[in-house]
Length: 141
Image (tube, rainbow, N blue to C red; front, side, top):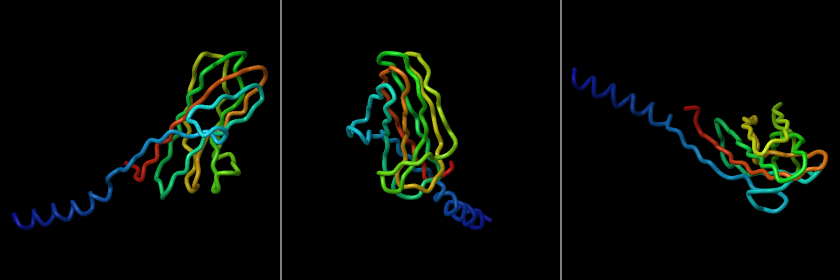
């Protein structure tokens, strides 16, 4: 009986070990200035991005916006690319930036791309900065 129980436990270990989670959090980098923080002025457009190698089970992007001056506005959308040059909307998420001192949003873009990022398109007379981090997990656990 002890041998049978030992064999069952050894068999469960083989199936449980591959379900371990590997997650990494990285800062997105501006395609404009190669820094982790960028500024959107008036109706300007800026993209923060990062290459995400390998197959991932989930990707979450967290964006932080800070008001510098003017009346903050515009929209932030998740974007994706396979070449890191041409960016396309990734999913249906859209965040409307409002005129407050600081705000944030999370996106979960669809999987299957080499590069992930966020794009802020400003509006009116404003200046605001933003940064973002990306969490990529290799398992759903």
